[in-house]
Length: 290
Image 1 (tube, one colour):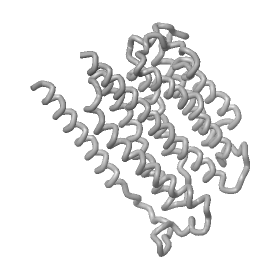
Image 2: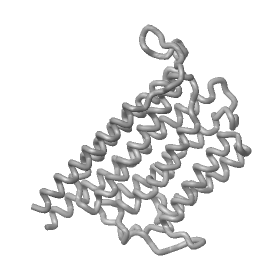
Image 3: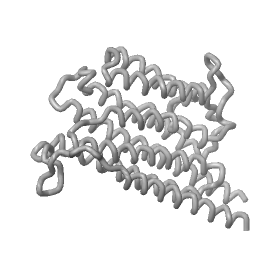
Image 4: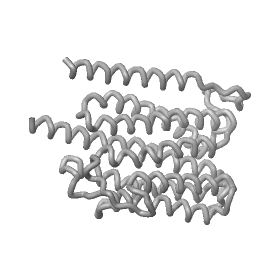
């Protein structure tokens, strides 16, 4: 009886979150006068320009894909063991928040032909720390070590690293400091997260691989692949930032946006999918052992 009530509560919560998310998306409209659109309903300024068309559609695909992933992760939350539902909730929050920001970024680009730096970093300052939280929620608290650096444990290192990475990235792209210096300092934050979580080949400072169950080991290493390799796309996109101008090109903002959008779609959704796969596999193993 209690299990049935729990499942009903989980489904109700999921539906409420999905409905709230949908209403928030529907209620966001621009008050400013937008740029003109062509006969096909698309912004006139992208017509005949492959790069600008790709940028526009990637913003569009980004918020649709993130929204779909949000619905999927919330729907699957009740299909995993209770100890993995936090992981599914975090996965849903990451893509849900990203979808909301992508909706705004698409609107800014469609209405004004501008790639928004501010909305991008508002998204990252929330979602990147959440991505770091997902690792311990999946592998379990027993696999997280007590090792500390400068008084910071696993969570502290990951959160501080995320704030350093995003903070200096924004400072560089907003022209608040030298772009190269900002890139190097931001990279130190990325390195902190890698040191804490480990790599596909090594334990992290804050993770003991021997205490991660066999069912979750593949997913744990896949998450590390995303952090170590998948995140490389972000500094590559940063190089094209018009304010940073490390690679000076016409339409640098669009090149940057394309790189960031592809990276976000791969990393945010992929991060959630591999966590879900591990949670499902671990849930099946628990059921078989009962």
